[in-house]
Length: 441
Image 1 (spheres, rainbow, N blue to C red):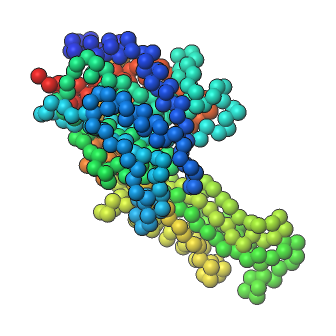
Image 2: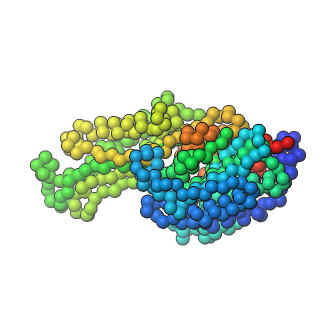
Image 3: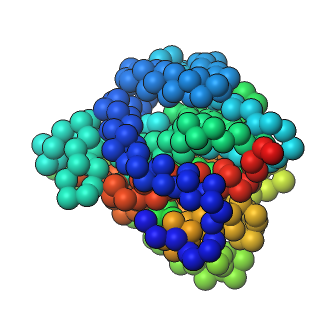
């Protein structure tokens, strides 16, 4: 680990040396987290090892003297457009903790999600995805990069400061949540529970860049109605009872989606220094009942991403959703079948984007810390979505993502995080804690 000449204090050098010496302990900590199966849920999935992982973290935080709060939020119910309907958290607790400072300093949120995407197809992995393995300087395992390695680094940074007897002036606020990969409902529940700070770091695998912005997303489901009939029999016109192929009717909608995508890409108001333009594309399609029967319906799930600038005064992307419906409905308006059988729309939860200014002090603090451990990061954004957006918008906590590893290694077979990234990330987080929260006199 190298450093910018003269950029660190003697105390900071002691802290970084201790983190370097603790390399094997940090790797073991990250490996412990990988071993918990916290595969992101599909609707109806039972809980896995979420509670056990959160208890493991709670115990270590309590050993630091932190006050801890491990709880299962109430089910989401219905009618909240920002979380899925009727989502329960049985067996999937959230964890918040607070390590109080001496006073007079700024508080810092350390956030991470404990869920990880499915390890399937498991037979393609070189080693067991739920048993961490170090090979060629890389820690392999599901979640090692996204984002249990980052969670381990944040915890190890706080533990190292405590072992060295460093008392911070500001509070350290810890929050590990579930359900980031599937909906963002975990972070939403944590904010509703009162988690907030003066600024925050989310341990996404940014490669030591500072992600200051993200796009929002929603996955509407549209259903096109058809009419069944024997596909090997000549059919009369639909107006006199003939069959209608719902899959063929989809073609009109598909063309409209392509046109809307191109329109969005060229609008000046969609230009952003750190994000790609918004997008819309079909990702799942279902239709048909039998190989020789006209399909009675065609159901299509869309992936819609939108920009922070499109969030309305109510904090939602409703204007974007309205535009999508209007454009696609208009595209089929000239077809008499659709006049009598309009597209049916279902809009699930709205995953709202947000951003912090590129020159915010938490951004400069994170990038300076990265530089001081020999890593060069830049200000950029995430075209997908991260929990940081919830803390920005719902908790007034300016939060960026800053973590080890590369997004290119997330969600893949043989996911890994470089071991040196783990060490350098823990070191950089420790520097941010010292500089942001301040050291008690």
